[in-house]
Image (cartoon, rainbow, N blue to C red; front, side):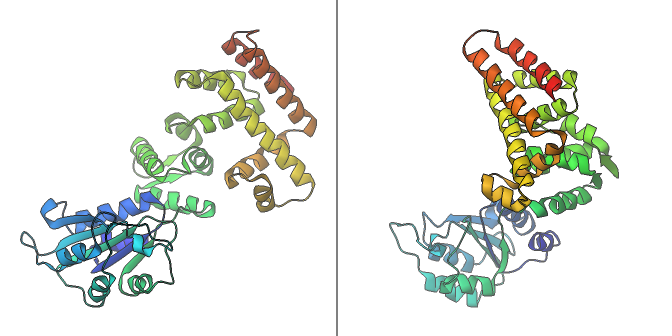
Length: 336
């Protein structure tokens, strides 16, 4: 974020080194440099795939004076030589050429090395030199405990606030897709306007729903004993061409998670220990912990049996699947 802010302010370094597995951040940084350095002018931009061409080709271009502008941007992507086990190529990279350039870059070119890898080999001389001479941005996925800070940072730029309940909906829907999360934030900001607040109701209405999060919303409707809401969510899923049997599986996963978390909590497990024991995403444990207090172990076991019975009823053809699913929702709410 610091490097991105500097680029936006046109505080441009002669060399950049971006690496990590989060494509959203890599793409953001790349796009900002294209706008601020090359002014979106193709004549001032050159992009090299280092799986296809040697690094000395990019260096040669960087050292060539620009014809159409005062400064140009040279981007070199996929530097396989930074991996612990480099991919086999039909040519060799002249890393000495890169080393010489890092020591004495020209003032009319901005050189960018982009390594979309989870890890690079930190022990290599070239890795150390890049970190020494370049402006470095490590672009790894956001950790769960940093996601809210990032969302609030984007919301602040958009001049809106996201209340806690609305944030939980966005986290459930989009925590694994930062591209979509930013798009949804922009959509919400347009809806509420400058200095507006995004509430739970607004988020539920406007945020694009995934199948998994819809299963969570169905569980919430069961907890709230709101049959009308549960059936409405079910109908929405049908419009998305989701099969009732697949939905039963997703709901069963949620209730099994709640039961397993409840049992582990009774044994004194911490949230982190639960995540390790169950081998699930931290958010699954977090949501289950928020819901387990609403149920006894007996009720959860009965709900799981009801889900299994409905699954068997549909698969055996004893009842039309949509009717069976709606009856199941009624029974779940009665049990809860």
